[in-house]
Length: 279
Image 1 (cartoon, rainbow, N blue to C red):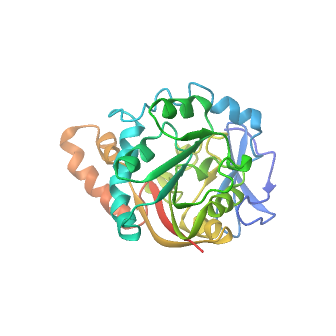
Image 2: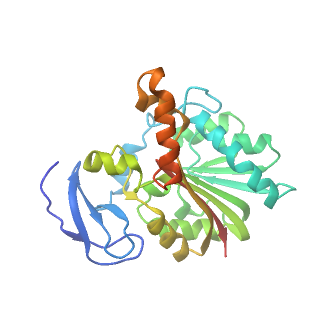
C-alpha cells in the first residue's frame, strides 16, 4: 500500500486539525477524523487530477440514459423508490435539480413524472450525452454558479459527496439553490457497511483521487448540519444485484439476499441514503 508520510491532516467536514492517518492507497493517506469520524484522503486532489479521472471515457461503462444494463437503470429504480415521498411533499410536482447527474437517468425519470428538471455534471462528455437526450444539463461545478438566481424544490446528489474536495462548501451551495422546506436526496457509500468492515483497507470504495470522502451516518449528519440541512430520514441499502454477485451461484442467492437484508436493517448496507430538509 505504501508508507505513511502524512500522519495528520485537517478534516474536510468539521475542520478538526489532527485526523489520524490509517494507511496509504494509491499515493493518498487515508485518515480518520477524531471528532466527526469521517475517513478521508489527503492530500486533496488537484483540478488536474480530477480532470484526468473524469475524462471523456469515465462514463463509457456507465451507460446512456435508459440503458438497462448500466448505472442508468439503477438511477431509474432510485427515482421509483424516492418518488412516493416527493409526491407526498410536493403533490403538484415542482423544480428538481440533480447535482452530479452523469448522463441524466434520474432527472429523465423525474421529467416523465411531471417535474421541471435540470442537472449539473462535471464531465463535459456526460453532460453532452444528457443534452442529446433532450435534458437541461449544464457542465461545470457548483462554485461556478451555473444556476445563479434559480431555486429548486428538490435537489439530488447521488454518489457525489464522496468525490468532493470540500463537501460542506458544496452542500451549502446546494442549500442556497433549494428553497426553505425543500428536500435533498443524497446517497453515498456507507463507511460502516459490512463490506467496508470485512474488506478493510481493500474496500473497493476507497479509490482516490476519485473517492476521497467516506461517510458514516455520524459524519454525514455533521456535514449536513453544518450546511443548513436537517435529516428527515436515513437508511442503508444494497443494490439489488449485490447479493447475486456475492452469492456467485444462483442456489446461494436466497441466503445472500437474507444476509444483505439483515445488514440493511442493522445500518450496515452498502449505501447510505438520506433525505434532508432545507432549513
